[in-house]
Image (cartoon, rainbow, N blue to C red; front, top):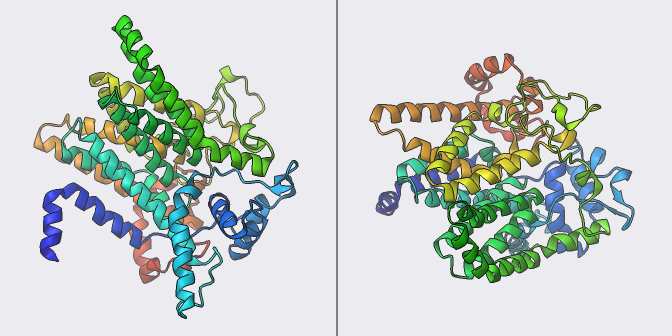
Length: 489
């Protein structure tokens, strides 16, 4: 056994380290379906498999009864959530996560029913609500995200050594909200979306390596559809292959035009694959909303001027930009409380590294940078909900993590001397500790800090510094999740 572990370590020490940390993270995770967003993602799968319909009322009422403090009664079960064209309760969650969970959910159902036949586990109902089902989808989301981490780490080694890609992967996993949505709120879409974004980047790089083959273009179309199915706004990642195809026009317009003309058949293949693979979402729209489009509570949020684009990064002034002409929007949050760089300052180095990477490798870096900026614009366009108050960190940038990992790794490899690398590693360690402190303060001690409603300065410094003392006083009950967490198990 020891020899096997040592051989795995020697083969790829970085991957081994990531694997050990992932197993540890699963051991302290909270695999449950609890509040409104998670329930909506989960309801697609449970309702279709068990009830053969998309009437989610029984799912919503059951989870509301299981978790009375989850807010389901006050949101999902309100009369205004009934769709007039179908008389069904709405579900604004896309279907992609449910599709990714299918093998794990059905496998759990089959195993549990088989166990019941031989008299095992009879206390666990095979109803789609008991903990085996919830843990199956939760752990599968974490596993998908971990596969995405390994994939991005490997892709990053195109440009930097293995050690730098490993450190960057660790940094942008453990020092950002990604780790939270892999361990605490596991059934959210973000872990799955990160996995699909890694798949998409892999398909795009495959196309760059094999420009004269049709398979990469089909993979781009399928993975782009996967992004839309998991989180609709990620369809904007389509700008990556688009910019890749247009960049050569800058220096070699005639050659680029000839190349594009020859690739029209590939563009059509990509488009057809995208439309076919994305069709489940439009079928879902029709079944629930009675129209092939999202519900109004989603589409009506958008202000295309993006009055809060900068605020999503640094909310030093959370009022809307004057140029957008928004005059009646109340300022709902305090300054310096919700911005992505405020919560996760390591993202600053990922963005800086991405800029350097784009300068050195424009054919790869510029499309990544364009995709990130497009997400900044869209996230700032979400009207009065741009700030994601109540969420841990600015979670809507999790899907851009592949770009941050590439940028961070490229920045790390500029540190040639040993002492500068040690300083960089210490900084990464501090960022990880900062994020771990926010996670614990936002879960175990959320009754004291309420940080998920917004960071509060200067109290946050005290909460972070005194965290070890409070954990010591808590003692063994820290590991009793049902007792410690405000919302229970």
